[in-house]
Length: 259
Image (cartoon, rainbow, N blue to C red; front, top):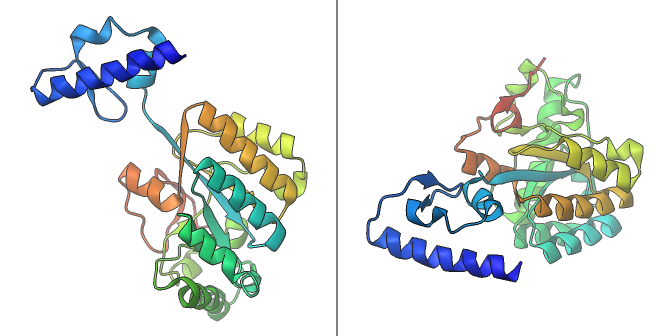
């Protein structure tokens, strides 16, 4: 492994020099760099695959927190791994956990809105929909400052009429291991790792110890497979998609039906 990375480092140095000299290239790497033809033959197959393979980005998201014991452990694990995540928080959970929200923001995580009382927006009175969103948004702005706090509707559902009342993008998911029901870290991890794809959004809940354990195992396994974790907002930015208010996105490339 050391020899391989030594060759890789030497190759990057050569690549920089050749690029600076305006040399032509033949193969495009996933990060946008061009690999000169004359040195392709010097690379082993595994290293070449690493270089030309498209980057694999994924967003890890958490609902229903913050919760003092579980969210703290999760934040510790994410910090240790240098991984950002997105937390869709319930307004009722904020009082007494303000320091956790400040820590999320300070450590590069995205904070979003999951309503004040986890109300089912699909059937709620329109005035109640606005109230549930605004109460949490007010708390977040008082605590973290002005910002664009994207919404995840509880249960992932909201109708067209009520969606028109939402002033931010709304985020669904592509992978749901139902961790709140399974309560088994190994099963949750296996489900996510076997179903995830690049540009995906993983749904978990930082309210359960098993989910926190699974989340950190998922990070370790997917990083070993070449995935890079980013916030939901960063996922859209990298993909070049500008999300629109009132739209429900399963991923940057896929809209979810509003019913």
